Image (spheres, helix red, strand yellow):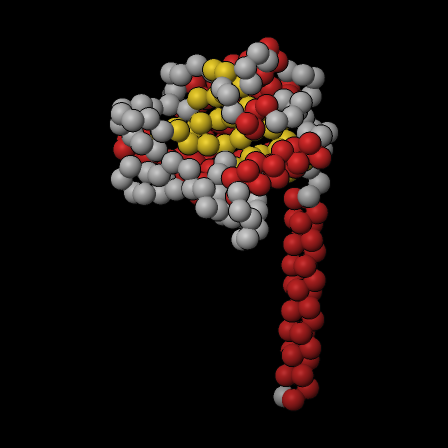
Length: 232
């Protein structure tokens, strides 16, 4: 009896070792697969608007800060881009602004740091993520902005806007906008207003994680469309 039990224990032990090795191999293979996405050879800068002391627009019913929604959409956008093989740089990855606690002019320092990241990265495209506002609570729709006088920016913005129209149902058109982030460097740049936090119906969508992912995927599709047209 003792010999039989001993043999059974040995067999059980060997089986456990085999299963452990097999599991480790499967996990390793999955991890390798996850990181073997072919590189696109393109770098995208995602600029999550606002942050820190500058929360941006505040939701009309929930008091949610624009800066938090921007960051959430930016993180999802990064995920979609990385899984397609794009290199991604984010101007901010936390809820903090780009400055120290003792900085006097926080907004200026924040803008300077974003500009530095853009200039140092030499990216193929900058996409700045924001939420919109309006005095009346009846405005809806995502909208893309480009630097004034930039024909290349207009073409890219129109392409992105068409994707937003098809996927998010917005009726708005791309427009030029006098925004710092669009003009602080020579890198092609777009600013996407993902919707109006000052309109209750749209605010309700924008605070939803599923809708934030939907917006992020729409922007990702726009980016891939734009760069695909350039021979990706």
